[in-house]
Amino acid sequence: MSSSRWLLVVLGFIGGLAVASFAGSLSTAQAPPERAVAPVAFKSEDPGLRGLDANLYMQTSAEYRACCYQAFNLASARLREALVNKPDKPAVVLDLDETVLDNSGFQASQLRSNLAYDPRLWDIWEERYGANLLLIPGAKDFIAEAKKLGVTVVFISNRNERNRAALKISLDRLGLAITDEKQLLLATNISDKTPRRQIVEKDFQVLLYIGDNLRDFAETFRTRDIKDRTPDELEQAILERKNTVDVERQKFGTKWIILPNPAYGEWMKPLGQGRADLDRLVPEPKKN
Ligand SMILES: [Mg+2]
Image (tube, rainbow, N blue to C red; front, side, top):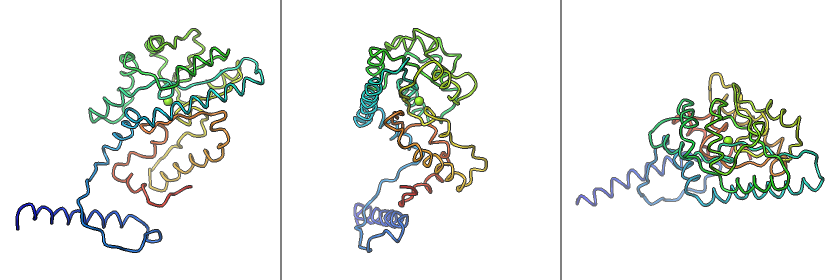
């Protein structure tokens, strides 16, 4: 047998195994009648690299850009609608990271260095790499429009209060200068934004909340503490958040505007179990 023919047989064998494994992952109830699958070679993928596509989606896809514009266009329309009623002291509240500020430089360097997220690395990024911050498409125009319409813009971010000065330099550079310190509410010791939302709501009528993480809207979206990280417990944590979204469905696109963030966020907390995460990927959707 020639070496190229031998290679084809080997690839065919590997391909056969891959097809068997792929078919085995589908439930028999949904599987179509069996038919012969031509043996071909399949490319395997390292689940450890899965953050790659999420970050590439944000950095290279035109679709991500379109989603951002869509979110801010909707925000703009809702804002104009709400202003028809001439609210007293109107405000909009925006999160910063991945809502207004693009941190893809951090994500990229983390991925390229093979490092998992670490708050110490993030702190260095906040403190020293403000010059690398970019803007999320549509954010700046929306903020400018809100201000022009007489609406106060407040940022509630979990960036560290300690790095306020560095952040303000960046915001200034990006054309989003902070003129009133009360319009930039950063994290001191808790990530729960509820008390900061209450501060704003005391002084203003908040017309819209804009964020990329559901906790930018309400703390009920926090992933509950997972003690033993059993598969059932992890599954429960995931389902609880989805159910809360269902309960609050009317607020999305009306009072709450969410931006896509496939790279990180509260949703990832029950994950990070290495290959065990693959068991979560099932052909049958767990919730419609
Ligand atoms: Mg954010």
